[in-house]
Length: 137
Image (cartoon, rainbow, N blue to C red):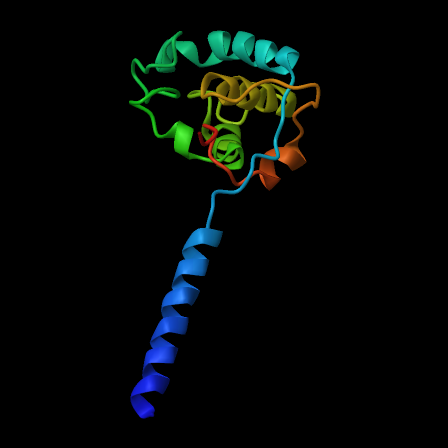
């Protein structure tokens, strides 16, 4: 009888681990952005960021911001915004307007595979979105 109880407990633990593993999916993106925000972000990026990160985001003197050579696709919009708004651009860290950092984040989201929508990107949405920049397939 004791053997059966241990077997049942082992089965429940296994089932519990399986349920946890099945339930542990990546969070859904909650941050959306407009094409106009991504376009504005592109313009600011080209003026403020492209010298170091490259016009194609592949990196020159600084890390790539999109593609297989980058860790940005695996970061959340909040993580990217948080870093860039404090440390970028070099020589003028944190010196851009909040709107510029939001728009650059929209541009990076677009360049890493997210599709524009009719919902504007906000700082609240950026901070609430824990999903990676690149949408899961």
